[in-house]
Image (tube, rainbow, N blue to C red; front, side, top):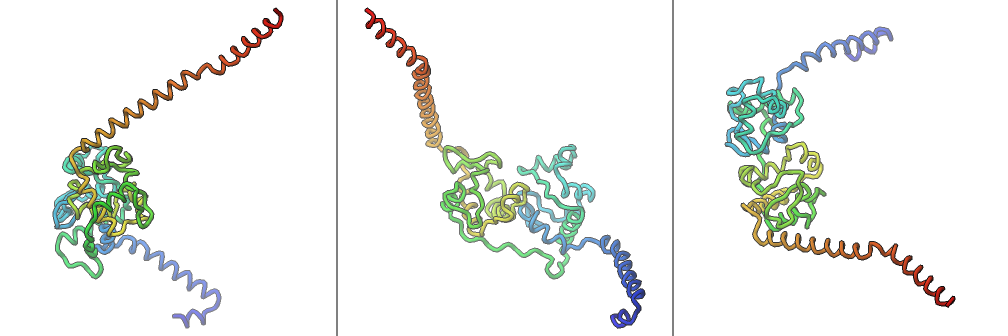
Length: 297
């Protein structure tokens, strides 16, 4: 074919090149319309879904997805995976039931139509027990090292820095275990996160994949190391107490009282000095008039 191209006239070469381009364009629709492969959905599932779902290993944060492609309406599934918030806002009964059944609402994951089709194909393949082609199944997550709750607390409150430069957890979250002042309010309170995410495995999976849009924006380029995940998960487990301790409430009361005293002192000082700018010139003028009158007399 290369030899034929070389022996053609310049006009023939152009025509030959045009034929190749047209043939490529003719094949594009067939390529674009090819069935989604489970291989394509494996990576998507691992990065977007595995933090909250399993396929055949039981419920964690969300439901077990084994067989869901045969038990649920395909149109609903496609819409739910693509944009669950839209179905919830529309009052879809199945979506509302899912929200009521689980403590954490599924976020919009920003998946394209092709991504949705691919991940559903992967779930269907894994549900049926068919052997995955080479590389299709996501590699199992490595076992985490033992967690150190004390080290996790330091990471949570900012006493120690994350290896990849992420912000301390309390910038956005609070938890009973950090004492009186608590943390940020951008994210949810994590006091019950250990049980909400299905224990150590579910919580570690969530911290490792950070599937929510807000967390992904912060942590996708600053991932936690396995040891950091284990440490933070261990602290969240220990910090999951029903109420803030009584000594924390006492600290809050003392700090509130001290704040009131400081405000009163500042107010009293300001009140006493409020008219000095007027009084000093008046006193000076009165003294000057007294001195002049004394001289005249």
